[in-house]
Image: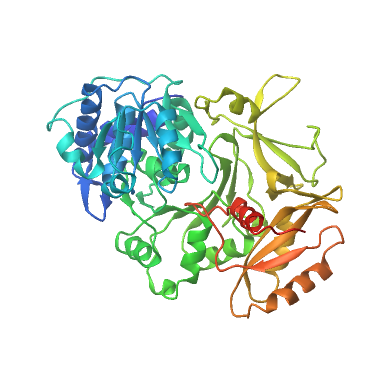
Length: 518
């Protein structure tokens, strides 16, 4: 009966995340809700802590629609503050721990927060003067800070347009943009997934191993709790620890980024673990090669679903890799309710199979960039016939005759050499065919003769550094004249963001700092 009641609520056009979780706490008070390396909470305890934190936030000045900044390692305390901010009528504003101190200060100011929850490590790193004008609470002390046991927060009924959270973009220079998600957007994203779990009879035991400040993690975090499941939170990803948790807690759902899947596949003892409880695995945030998908399908139990979209929203493409083994080179087809256009540089539609700029539309679009209306407008393409704003996905891709979308590269990464368009992914694929090339990246560098020219980077395995020249010669022999690499460099490790995105800007900055000319 309880499941039917929750499923009915999740199927509504709009609802309250906090109310659904409160209902679960009433139905199953003794069931485990969350665990981390330091302990665990039942559903009754979790709900009580959320109420007490929310009450204290309101008592100490939190106003409706005001942000609550959170900075630190992922754990139960972090998750509770996120949920309490929403319960109190505020906006969760998780901050990227890898950002510089000036960037973090800029994000705190941009968010408009009066409260900053920060863990002891980041507090010591940033010093006492950081965000000194805010109410500053260490995450390790939230148990002492929250209102007394049994305290209920003032009632809050969310409006669909109310902000739910702000996710700050990563991998950028300057102050990252704050991407605002409304309650309505989040309600359209996660309740359907939770309802699908309940309707299938899946016992949700989710493992979150990407940071709670990342939009990627919300699939493992919010969907699990809306389904009344048990959430296991990792503070930092580690192959042995992830495998131990997945095995011992009989994890059924998880979200991993491609670099994590790769590390698990490369882990020598991977096949020694019992992962038979895994029913559904997700992946998003970075390019996921067909070869890696195939290996994951062969070696990890359960279905594999790749999600392609943006934190800002736009089209959502889904690839159920276990159902379409012949489409692993794609990111799937637009999900129900999502639309996709492929346009040329003059915003005209291109033919099926031809590459162009991807433009997306769905019911899960951001409310905009906080305090940056000009940047918000730049992110959209407005249909001249309907006036509807579509999201510029920032990717170049093509759609095959079956409607599956293949990514060619990032629009900003496209290289224009001598008037010809060069897609880095084509060159990277050729590099990866060479023996000993473990990873490859290609960027465009300024060229006096060609405007731009492609330059490559490789991580090698099992071959000597001297092999770079032979690799470049072999690849260039297969490429067209306009595509050929001007140089190829061996590096020890590719620069990546906290969720595994390749940071090509750092490769470009490295060459510019060296005064390289091509």
